[in-house]
Length: 215
Image 1 (cartoon, helix red, strand yellow):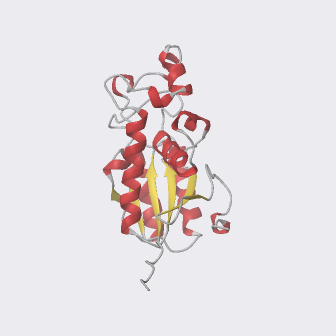
Image 2: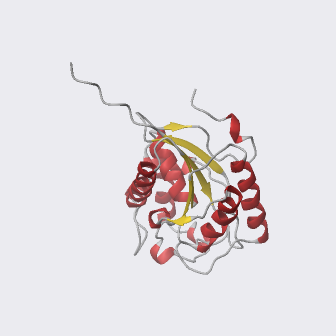
Image 3: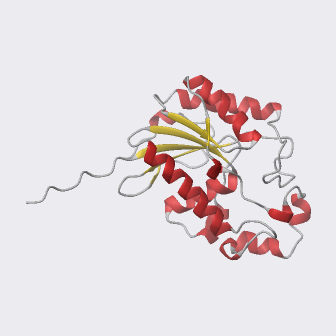
């Protein structure tokens, strides 16, 4: 009788959005360089570091290459006695010609309704489509999970990529992903790489993470 293959060993992924910047909620910064954490964002990152440290051993910390994510990952990695690594696939969506524009102006565009109600059909002018962004972040995190079977890792990224990954793990169609809220420095723990994804929490900003475990 043939021996059954061993079941895949799942990995716990702590998705962390970067902390608040001086333009959070007012500008669509995209991949523009030079945007750093505001003082409140630095405080948020320090609190996130303490929350993550309270749950036990973490094998690795990964961050998007942009300044605001690296600055969020740095205190987390330091608190854990690790060095943050850059993973290009975790980068913010490419907003193309919308990069750097005021959200109040973008909301007046006829395309904004499509971004909110049917994002799977939308491509940012000169930039990325939502399906491409989702495929990229899912693939990037899958690669990191494959490196750390049975371990716990921290992944610091941006709101839209995290929302897209949470939607994918939840089995939610991309057209509904705008219903998910990912606040600055929130933590969304997922269990990936096993028989099926498990969403432990979404947009956690205050509770004790040590109580989160697959039931």
